[in-house]
Length: 362
Image 1 (cartoon, rainbow, N blue to C red):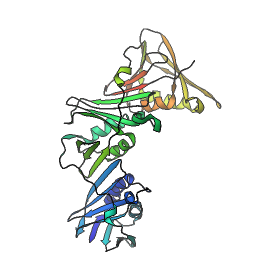
Image 2 (cartoon, rainbow, N blue to C red):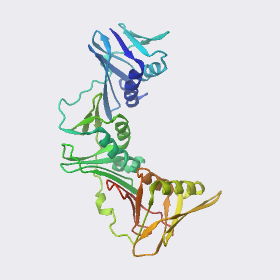
Image 3 (cartoon, rainbow, N blue to C red):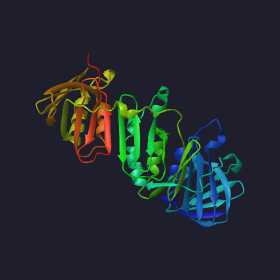
């Protein structure tokens, strides 16, 4: 069996699959890449038990069959190849890889040891890949990272005939992104945040097909198929904790605020939640931070609304900058109280909403 394929396309396709396959595992078979050859394409597949992935790459192929080889070694070799084209010559027990003036041989593994994956034959749902990536990437930052936080380490996806919405929260902050667009599926489920990271990297401007199975979400693009294992547990009723009354609100440019918080936070005490203090009064926002190396401050002019003329709060600077990053233009920053959640939203795009709980200052 012999294959000729452009090096860049091979490296790109292989790179996505390699990220899923574990480098080391108690199950040696999981570190293997399954390779299927047909008349005009190569099919790579692998799994880490949380995500199954299959990549299809057009190529000039002579022969057909299924083989297995160590995924990460193969990927390292391909990335280092010097030529524009790659020749893969499969023998009985080894693969010869030729590119430019370089050649090497790699031992093949038993194909029966590599995971044999299956994907749906039909998909009932569909969305624009770029839209789904946007929905997920806007909220992923708010998911928890600690093991004990269980379901909070995921991103909830809500699909119905009226909406597509993603939500994430770690208990100290929350983000959601809402689209008035139907996918064809009617379900609510939670994806592991790490799996969301891989999904976002694979989704592009083309259509993505969706199917919900027993404990998993399956997705298919023009070049990739994935099965993503869903998380178990009940996601909290987040809508109940989003405040609706705000004695003070300000409006200003999102980038201006983000840059100011980042500058002031250089002096923030890392052992005290990276704290920055806000004092708002009569259309002026004063941002300050103090730590072991000194004190910094910056004042911004803002458009202020509300029944109260002033308010003083403190925030974790990182949490605040994370919430600001998805915003590109004028924002509204609404304060429900000194210890109750604050909301950030765009004045031009109501799809995105972020909530940050202030630090206790007493």
